[in-house]
Structures are given as structure tokens and as C-alpha cells.
Amino acid sequence: MMNKPKIVVLGSGYGGIITTKKLEKLLKSGEADVTLINKHSYHYITTQLHKTSAGTAQDNKIALPIAELINNEKINFKKATVSSLNFDDKQVLLENDETVEYDYLLVALGFQVETFGIPGIEDHAFKIRSFRSSKAIYHHIENQFSKYQEDHDPARLTFAVAGAGFTGVEMVGELVENLKNLAEKHDVPYEKVQIINIEASPNLLPGFALDAVKYTTELFKTMGVKLMTSTKILECTENYVKVDSGEIATKTLIWSCGVRGHQLFEEAGLETIRGKMKVDKFLRIPNLEDVYCIGDNAHFMVDEKTALPPTAQVAMQQGPVCAENIVATMRGTELKEFEYNHKGSVASISDYYAVGKVGNFVIKGKFAALMKQVVEAKYLFALGGPGLVFKQTLGLNPLGFVKRTVKQ
Image 1 (cartoon, one colour):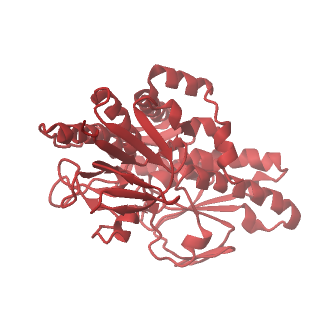
Image 2 (tube, one colour; image 1 turned 90 degrees about the horizontal axis):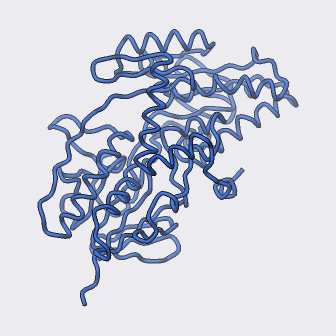
Image 3 (cartoon, rainbow, N blue to C red; image 1 turned 90 degrees about the vertical axis):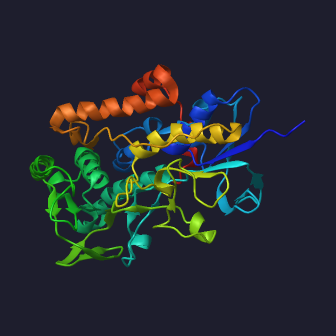
């Protein structure tokens, strides 16, 4: 009797979990062994991590137990950290010294933070890179209010966000929403709190429609946010951030200035583009047998000049096509080319405002905030159907296990 093909999926971010869900539907009973490997036992909604960082969302709204998202009779879930990849022998090596063999491999391990070599960013800036790192940001912020009561150092109440792209703008919006609550909780006058948004480009939301940029800029000003555009960060320390116009006394710099692919490809001796692997129109890595790559780890060229950005929307569209092509390769049938269909983008600015573009239309304000909630609900529906949407809406998902794994 022939051994069943082994399909291994690395990472349960947007791309990994969506691919796994699609494999569940496509594969016949007993047709293949599918293993999903992830560092944590939960899938977190990356586009909502700014809420965790600011303390405006419950843990169970952001982190979802993987065991409740997959069919455990069809998928073997392994909680482990990947240490290296052996493409010659078709093996995945784990940190616990276990080796997992594969016939078909999908690498969807998500992004790593790009620091651009700026001194101090790696050691002193806070990064929105995972659920745990986002929890650490919130605990640090609350700790600054507690310590301010002891030493009255104004740097503790100055919160700087580096980057005014989507993530940076959303982070600022959440800080505006919750720092007032933290100030009241710790009996600190809110007027002593300062939120600064630092951006190297001349405007917020670089590359976005001018109407949306103007709206966001005016909204931030009414919220009391200090905008520092056309400003480059030169250094970050525990006590200040050095920019090209001087120094900002602060204990908190939240970094949202770019991402890169995973280091595993570089460690395997492969040529990458900022840690990303070039993939073909079928989402395969050329010159590697039966290895697929999607999401933040993939460099997919739409045309000769344009590569797809590392967004959740891209990963979610790549997932189903990747699953279809893995199964097609296994069965010896025709593969499907991936074609990206941009459906618009919406950035939330707290729960009450948002800005975005859908088609040719710029949307903003409370209507845009509603559209953002619709987008998030659609993703939950894709993950777990109406039952998951209902649970999340009512906050019924038990997630005590996540709190126990987070380093407080």
C-alpha cells in the first residue's frame, strides 16, 4: 500500500489558516496527511493588533483557538517553532529537534519587522508584530501611568508612533480612544498626555487619496495628536527618540514602519528580496520541488514592475488558490493562475471613525468605520461561518489559555 502524500503548512496567519481550511474541503477522506505547524495554539487577527496594543479589545476578540477553527479529524495541528528548512531532503526541522517530512510544503510564516538598521529600534522600540508583542505594548503603556505617579517624568506620558501608514494611523486612533481611560484610572490629568505621530513622508497615509489624507490630518488635529511629517527617525533609546529636527523625550516609541519576509529562506542560503521569495503565477517557488509560498513571505509580481504588497487581503486571496494548486499537483491535474482582485482598503481611527477607498470612492467617518466592521465580520465568517461571527460578536470565545501563555 502506498503512503499517503504529506502536506505541511507552516504558519496559521491569514494565508496559512485559509489554505488549511480550503484543503479540508478539497481533499477526499484519506487522500493526504495534512499537518499545520504554528508557534502558538491560536490564530490572531493581525489587522486588529493595534487594538490589543492600546487595550481597546478583549483578548478573545483578537486571538482564536486553532483547534476550534480546523477540522481536527482532517488536520493534524502541531504547536511548534520551525528552526530550519531542508529543501533537498524535503524536511522541516523544529526547535524541539523533531523533523517533519513533507511531499508538498507551504511556507506562510508571516512577517518580521523591518528596522532599516536604525540604531536602537531593535532594542528599544515596541513592535506590533504578534499578539504577545502587542500585549507587551499595552502593559508597558499602563506601567508608564503608574510610574508617572512616582516620579512625574513627562516623558512617561509622551507616546510616539513611528509611521503614518495604515497600521500607524490605526494605532494612533486606538491610543486616542483609550489613553483618556488610563489617565482617569491612574488619576493623571489627560492634558499632560501627548500622542505624537512621526512620518518620513510629507503626508499621513502616503500614496492614499488626498481627500482621505486631508480628512485624517484634520481629525488627528481635533483629537490633539501632534503630527510630525517629513521627519526621519535617526535613533531610539530608552529615554528619547532622535529625529532630524532634534530629540523627543519619551519612554515609548511604537514602530509601524515596514515589514520583511521570514529569515528562514536566507538561513537556507536562498536569494531573497527583503526576506521574501519570488513565486510564480501558481504561487510556487521556482527551482524548489513542490514548495509553495504566500502572504508576507512571497514576492509575487503583478507585472514587470509591480509586486503585491504584504497585506491580509493578498494573503486571504492567495490561500484558496494555493490549496487548489497543491491538490492539483498531487492529482496531476491543471494548476490555476493566481489573479489578485483589490477590493479596497479601510483604516480604522478608533471604533468611531475610519478612512478608506473602495473602488473609485473615498469613504470616511462613521460610514467607513461601519465598513471596516463588515470587512472583519466577513473574515470571521470565512474562518468559522455564522457561528464564529455570533460568538465573537457576543464575546463568547473562551480564551483563558492565551492569557496564561502571554508574558505579563
